[in-house]
Image (spheres, rainbow, N blue to C red):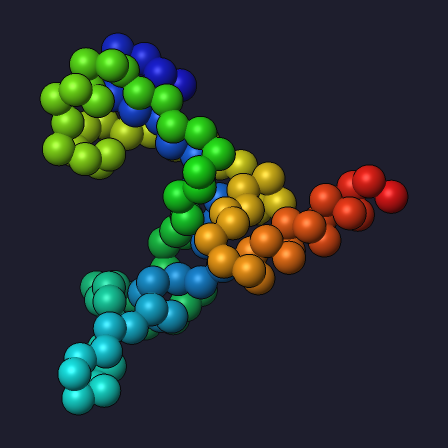
Length: 107
């Protein structure tokens, strides 16, 4: 996957929701609008597949890290991993879910 034309490889997992239909921005008045407007996409089923970045692995060239302005400032490829292998533990509910899945593996 990391070839001469690739600066970085990240891991991703299929997203549970589409930003074309499920993610909104709220202004100070509480008004909401879609974060991403999908041109010509009127049905959720027609929206392009999207992925969540995971923290499973990031592989990058040292030169890219030293010179980059951010992860996506170069040529980035991704590897899809199953959701159960990509649980981020950012809050208590994430931790409980990880414990539950780990407990199932142990039994």
